[in-house]
Image (cartoon, rainbow, N blue to C red; front, side, top):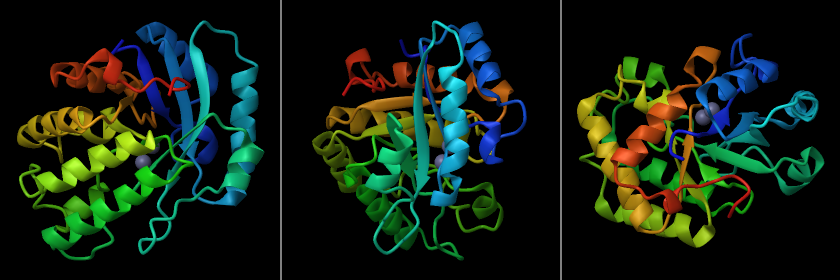
Length: 255
Ligand SMILES: [Zn+2]
Ligand SMILES: [Zn+2]
């Protein structure tokens, strides 16, 4: 079960993933890896990109496979003061997507200020989790590479500065709001350049603790290249090793 799910995949359509990420190629790769369920969740950062998602939906409808394919989108926080995300009810209805995953994609800081960065991330992650349109909070504590390189995030080599009460509050809120929290393959578990052994060990405990507060754990590769779809299985293995039970996993369409 842990290694048969990929709930976070990008495609070539939105231009973030590369040309290897066609829907047929993703499905063939899923079949090869023995996955049961995949969710296609390309970026929807603004309404003008809705048309590209209709093309994805058409591709999904026209493919023949035993893999269960779920049509979704990944949204971003677009207002750091309110935590508002880049989809509304009308857009979700129009698109007819089955799942919405989303998260924070910036520290919103230009200098290293751990306390302030942690407080803001926590606040924004809570807003995402409480948003009734969002099914999964993606990649908590992931930050863009440039923020490590610039030094803004260089201090985050483990999760020791993260207050226990923040973890409890996120886990409890996610459980209460029926929002899952993601174990992400390419952003975290195979991204060992910025997330080293100490961080990885802390992160497994972190996910375990969130699950113990009742949050479901989603597994995704976040692949932007066909060669990294298998990162969902690395994430799944880490979730299993963390001691998270099969009934604590999030399965799309089963809430
Ligand atoms: Zn993301
Ligand atoms: Zn993504």
